[in-house]
Figure 1 (cartoon, one colour):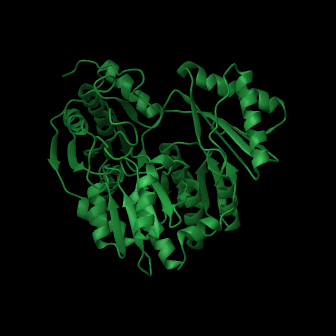
Figure 2 (cartoon, rainbow, N blue to C red; figure 1 turned 180 degrees about the horizontal axis):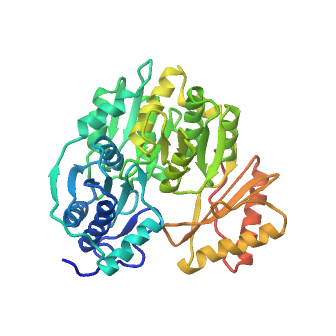
Figure 3 (tube, rainbow, N blue to C red; figure 1 turned 45 degrees about the vertical axis):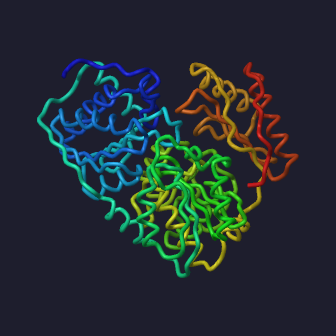
Length: 466
């Protein structure tokens, strides 16, 4: 049991552990993660860890191996079973466990899976994840006689989700679980939430037979849009595979994107937290930062990545943060972690108590013209170097540059962004302007920089209103 273990070089990522099941990620990897992470917990004086898993076909086997590794270090493991990632976060906080681990592939294809971790109340990321690999390579593990037990936290979790609903009139809401891990909790939640509810694909199926569970891709929202129209719903809400990212549709069938949702939540949260810091990632619209300031808040642009935003929230005491990707974090009344079910409850409450429509709230935001988030393949070894080259050139030209995460260049037309993904072998590009002509100029400037680094120009899809 004390043999060293080596992970595939692509598995230990910036925010979590992720790989292709049977190829780059196996039960042996999960067992080694359990032994390494369990050792970290034990050496910090921890005694109990919560473990959960999502609805992917490979998750039960990976969970079994992970628990075996944790128990071998002397820990007591509370196994909460199948459910969304935020239920694992909740259980870890509620049971005052020293740590929590979730087996989940999030929004990745069905043949992927992975592991997300929290230590104490904070995320595990970056160097902490790499250190697990170093420990496994040396078999630097604690030995102990641990134990495990199965516990059910579903009713407690649902009750806590419902506690902060503050609506004053009934709504009709369509919910799309995408056959992901939130399905069972969604059924229990909507059975007690006021109003009428239409549920789509709430049966948990790791094959994802209806559509891919990623609500940030508009093509995955077709069924939700149809349900909103057919049933005359006020709102449509969709989830990703593990229930920590939200997508929303207004009654006109339009997407309300992640940064727009943060703007609506911020206006509400700032009423009880005047002057508070509200955080959003570098991919978010300038309109969001302007809206935060307009409502008396202090906008803060930060790095993309759920772990990085959670850490920055804790550091600044921020009551709210969010990403373009639909990870939205409430510390106002909630625990500071990303929970799409909770965000859904808060959105329903917001629309209900304001006696308006989500469409009207969306139309009250500044109208920007922008590209979708555009990703294009690049060699893993080259991606960060290209960003550095571009940064050097634009800074030398005297441009206004924010380099907190990649390169975000602001001009009179708006802004463009180029950053290297921390989880894939891609560069991510985006541009936003006040006009279509301005957007074309921004796209041209970005393409010019990429060509100067020897890359072919990316193909931006359209330039829609946002």
